[in-house]
Amino acid sequence: MHNGGFFKVFLIASAISLLLDWYVHSGLKTLTADWSSNLWRNVVLWGYLLIAVGITVTFIIGLGAFSTAKGMRPFHEWTLSLFLTFVVTKVVFVLVLFLGDITRFFIGLFNLIGRSEKSNGASAFPGRRKFISEIAVLLAAVPFTSFFYAMFKGKYDYKVHRTTLYFEDLPDAFDGFTITQLSDIHSGSFDNTEAMQRGIDLAKAQKSDLFVFTGDLVNNAASEIEPYIDRFGQIKAPFGQFSILGNHDYGDYIQWDSEQEKAANLEKLKQHHKELGYHLMLDENVTLEKGGQKISLIGIQNWGRGFIQIGDLKKALRGVPEDAFKILLSHDPTHWEEQVRYNPTTIHLTLSGHTHGAQFGVETAGFRWSPVQYRYLDWAGLINEKNRYLYVNRGFGFLAFSGRLGIWPEVTVIELKKKTSLG
Image 1: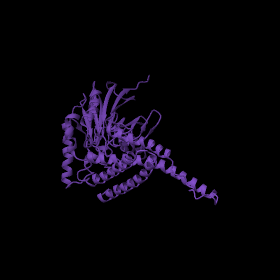
Image 2: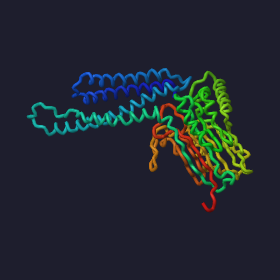
Image 3: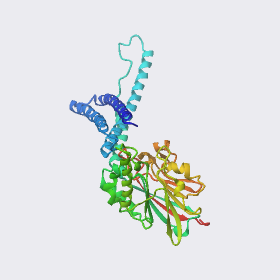
Image 4: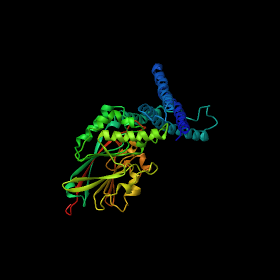
């Protein structure tokens, strides 16, 4: 979206937010109408307006200063996140209040129809009852506290997801082989280095045989990873550290002074992968050998439905034996959907990321939901299509919304096991 369209969208959003403020303020007036202290009544009413309008003005100023030439920084993400928190909270409050007001309206109509001419001039429409405003406050407190938890705690609440996969044609020497996967670091968004370090320490503690990173090291610019190279470079594995590029790594979402500058940024990012100790795979493959037996690790550049499509799977598979056990690193899970799962060449396991699980949703033992599911068929965890597996990492970092709620940042650990005729 170009700048003009972008600014129109957030100006409209700001106007809607201010309209919601007017309605919420009317509900707070009902809530505080019988308070004995005028001081506290004024503190609530004027305090709300000061905070709510202040958040909206900060949103306008903050995103008004946003330049696509530099990309979104933590300040912009916090501005957006606070605005979204208050908007969602206000929407919940207004919905409850509106239901109460609609009820009052229909009661009033019923009274008007049935009232006699000797009504003494009393209003047919009942006044707004205080308990409706109290319910609105209580329900609105749920998204308010949840979003603040997401911003201050949830985005660094790293979880280890362990998965064991069984394959009949896994070479015996690789029985029990473990892989740690990180994805979508988005280093330009970090605002708490020590909290982020806990995720790195968690990845290191897995002591897996192989470490892979499946794209989006930065939001836009190669410089974003520079403060953290020593930290992410701490992650080592006996069989090496391998990485690929994600859609954000190409610098397509900000303005550059020239194509040469954009190309130089990508080259700089590739150099940073080397400094991290990662073997950046650009449509290529490597052979991992253990006990005289081999498996093939394949890595492609980004290929995603609706995103940049330059990854070349055919090129990446050159030289790989047809009967080799194959693991593919591909950032976007739609690549697996469209080119991998039905490919004549069997790729046993594909590791992806990209979706972040929308950084918001619900995952329980019997139920899973996220708004991202309306965009992606395969958006988190393990998918199996006739023993061709896809694992979608939920992401290590965050982008735009400076928080995570329900879909926590992930460290993936996958164990490969030999499936025998007995088990």
